[in-house]
Image 1: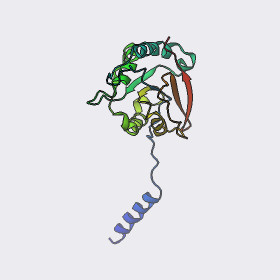
Image 2: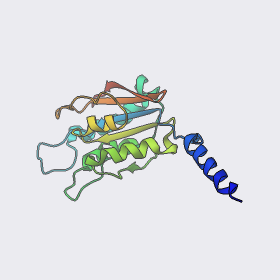
Image 3: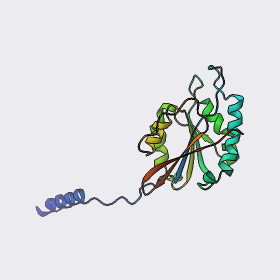
Length: 188
């Protein structure tokens, strides 16, 4: 009878020293397309896109659908933007991707504020629905380098210039490693 507790103890120690391998590790998306919102108006109190920004938002649809480097990634399976705050911050990111989301028949998901980029990265990287697919994110330029780093890019990209609206980051995942490439899209 005294052998039973010893057997249990040995079994527990054996399991702790030789844990069962985890078989259900979530694979990351194949690619993440990361952009900033389109142009803003001169009036800093206006939370919406400028006419040039509206034009760029419409151009995003054809860019995603026809640029050879981007079409090779596959159409986005999800579209994310920043959540709108009580002061309307985040409105421009949603307006930038709205035409694309409509074209793709996808909702614009905006579960997080701009400063919560790490939570968004965790959500996207841990969601099996995005495994092996392409995801598009439109975020505030101030947090894009940190968001890219939270998505696995090393080293963290340099600070995004406030006057730049046409840069596209493409984060690709291969063999557990994130790589960053850049592209541009105009508003014509």
